[in-house]
Image (cartoon, rainbow, N blue to C red; front, side, top):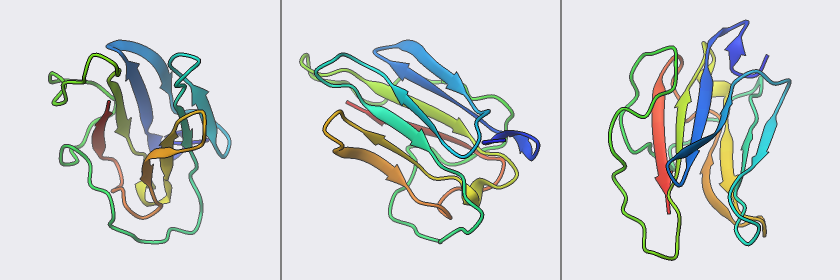
Length: 131
């Protein structure tokens, strides 16, 4: 059920240049979204799994909190140069946040963000930003 609904109310939202382009949470084992322009189309992939591998290499831009819907409650903390676009991800994990991993890659498969299984808490909110 992805990160929603059989095991909690997880979901995610992606803003690209200030516009919501993806809202999701229900998927089988993974979900991939192409966003942005043709010359730079980041792809976001979520892959919950049943065998978490703890790691602590990437921290969210804000500490986790408890909620049922992803929201962008504050202004972006990044100001992008004129030649780039702000991409924001809001993620609410389900009852098994430790099983959730995700990555943000460009069209050349260069990873901009990657969160491993075991790095996220259960039923918590996270926000990420990238120019």
